[in-house]
Amino acid sequence: MKSNTLSWKFPKKEFLVMRIEIVLIAFLALAVYLFAYLQSKGSWLLGTLFTALFLALYFLTSYGMQRWRQVEEHYKLTKKHLEVVSKKRGSIKTAKAPLKDVAHHKLDKTFLGGYLLTRKGKKHLLFFNSKQEVERFESFLKKHLKKK
Image (cartoon, rainbow, N blue to C red; front, side):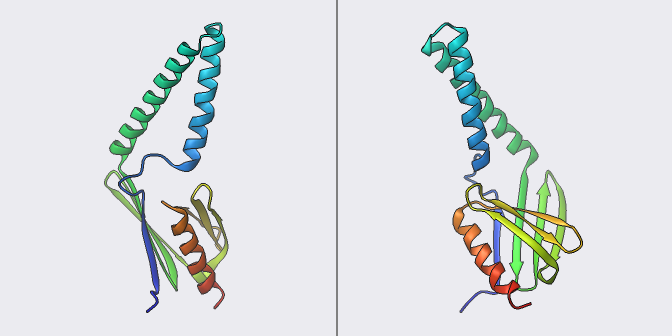
């Protein structure tokens, strides 16, 4: 029996950083390493220590902000509409987008995100935990958008 709904929660409990964030952190860590290496006149040890300090501070700050903000999004896609429930530190916002009003959608399987754009100009951001979630969403959406 095929399901008429697709739902997921973002972020999962084991979530630490988003993929796009990892790319940015890697570039910043490389820049910190190169800057410290060049400033210390070629000492790879100081470059490594400053890079490790930067990464430790970044991840501690990131973890603290995630715990303090308590951001969570619940997505539910049916053959009629997409419902997004956003929770942030006690406040709850709900948004619904009928699939018949979807004008455009874009999904990124590398960075696990995307958006839906309705005919009224409303943009609904999408976040996924895995590539499989993106693929299931895309196939479900294409299947039900073709019927219109």
